[in-house]
Length: 556
Image 1 (cartoon, helix red, strand yellow):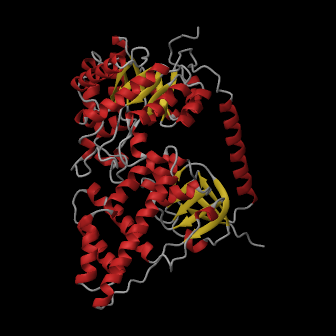
Image 2 (cartoon, helix red, strand yellow):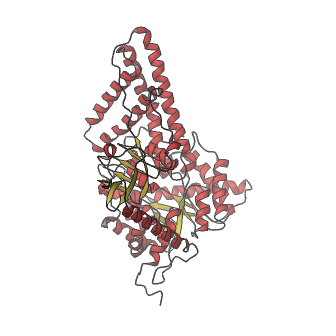
Image 3 (tube, rainbow, N blue to C red):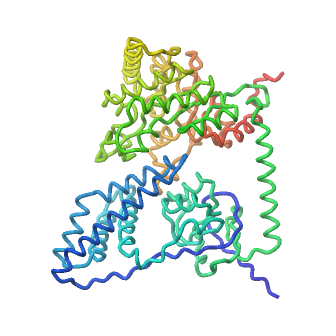
């Protein structure tokens, strides 16, 4: 009997393998009725549109509420941006006017408005702004789908658990939802490894292939398929050799996991005996408890914006204090570094702090600039941090610092908070160290000036790389230019490390590079001895540190 085995080549989006049964998810195709409607249908069609709009908003809100852990940051911003589009009065009024003025049904009015907006985006010269048309299409597509909800065959996400999805394209929102419901992997016929969905899949460590063009025509529901990363391909009806290869990979992963587990209590030390300090980035108490178990030296970056992005409206001092106090208690005496509010218009802040209409939010009112522009809000955050410092060692880290004046202004406000709380009879802890994030090139170049005010510095390599190379890593058109291995970035990191060491100040790296074992040796050779990362990266990085020989002869 001839083998049924078929191999389909694709592009690698996310490493790792997956073996399971296929589930085909076909895109919904709607027939848009363009026939004119009578005057009596205008009001009912308008109500249908408004109900679909409300349903789409509810879907987004429900999806956002399902996010947990790092997904809140990864995807929450995009969902908030989409939610804002659904509230845009210009868009809503335009559809209503098409229903009443052009006398067409809600679906035709939506399609016409979508076509008009997409044509406008297509005409934009700037490739990044032009690519934002995808957001418009996804949002309006969600409203159109809601109009057809009764006729559409809906997929219960829970039914996808344990299956490998095969489809033509996937939005980051759907990918996150499916992942939360336990899918094993994804194969898409379109897409590319630089898409938002591919980036999200890598962050989720979810096996994913894209560009697998014939997958939908060759694979059927229930077929057994294998996703491989090296080489990137889909194997339909895998044979015994394929299954043996998958089982060998599983065994290797299990051995690696077991081996890493033994590093939980091991010191972090290079092969030649140089001690390295590993910290964690965290936003929730669960992250911190895990960090403590893994032997982290402390929390190098606690994202306080988590509190602000999880809700509509601003958290008050008591709510912030409770969150910060829980973090300090969870670290049981090891320091916790609170990064002050780091949001801007690009994060579509729902609390109303940021200005969503800023023309260039990446260079606008964000980070410390926003905090100093809203001192009444910032003062509350500083008071909450100072109160939490009575429970254990605490540091304050200031984001987006571009000059020493900003740091001095923060220190003045911090001193005011300490003075006010002492006067009010609050118990206070030890002196709180004040640090600056180095993520703007000017901060790295003028690091000597910054170190006159900062007690410590932490290099945020994600933003520093983007600003240095003028390349947005989330922009498919220029993401290839985003290169953490660029010599210009190495020059700045080494410059900051040397200057901090000379000034007797601590310096850490807290961007994604810090948690990537491939960069561990590189950063150590540039003079970095403190790394802060996601808790899941701590043991692999500890293992990578042990393999590095810095030639210091410390071991002897």
